[in-house]
Length: 173
Image 1: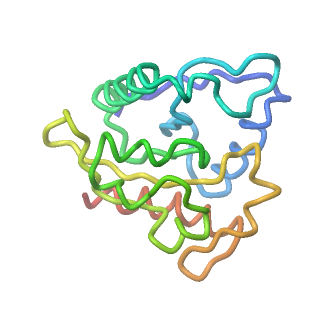
Image 2 (image 1 turned 135 degrees about the vertical axis):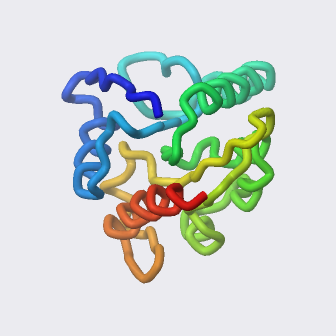
């Protein structure tokens, strides 16, 4: 596995401020994680969340999918942490194994069909599989994580277990 150097964003960045403690409590070092919120680029202004302006541009979306596949091919992560509910349904275009996450599903529905998917084959990367865990976007986490439900755990404990299970399962796939 390639060890990424963790470059810190400003301390007031809500994504990192909310995500790093979760990873720490789950026993996961951030430099060994592969995170994606899918779209390449920035949102206009100084916000770190919101609807990405390029989401309606089919060519741009296809470009982001291709870049994601290249990143997965080069880095070969054991676990991909999918951050948020804005794009998860597009991942079915790179892996049939992710097709259970349908567009428009609420997190309660995702939790019912399985927020952790093990051994997902990626189109265009022969012989490689990885695991995916669909998490609440860290910026929205404090407000919404309470509704998560996984293996008898609720809220924060549910998402931490999703991360742990994704890593544990990855050692056997």
